[in-house]
Structure formats: structure tokens, C-alpha cells
Amino acid sequence: MENESGLAAAIGGFMRWAITPPQSYAVYLVCLFLVAGLSFYAGSLKPKKAVSIGPPPLSAPRN
Image (cartoon, rainbow, N blue to C red; front, side, top):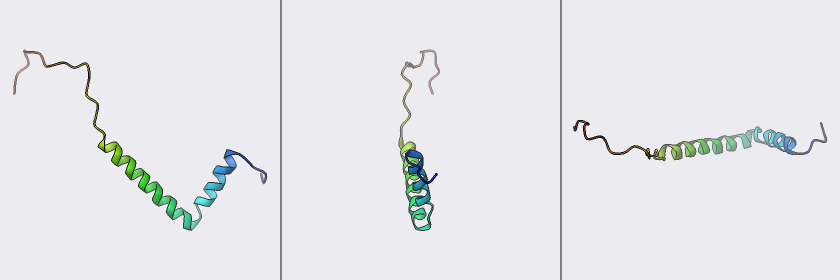
């Protein structure tokens, strides 16, 4: 266990570093801004219009 190397050790080392008090505040703020930015971006996207729908039929009532 002491001689770990690779991706698992890197992730474990980062997690150990990220949960210590000074860094945890920064990690929290970064995640908060990331979630807020992604939700703002997703909310600003326009839905795609349907391609196969043509004009309404002539028998449709007009409003």
C-alpha cells in the first residue's frame, strides 16, 4: 500500500490534499462556480426546431 503508483494513487493523493481545510474552501468554490456556469450555459441554449414539420394544413382554423 505504501508503494502505490498510477492513477489510483494520484486520485487518492488529490483527494487527501483537497479535503484539508484551506484547500477544501477553494475546491468548494471552484465546484460551485463550475455548476453555476454550466447551468447558466445549459439554460441559455435554444431548443432545436423540428425539421420535418411543414406548414399547417389549410383546413386548420385561424386564430
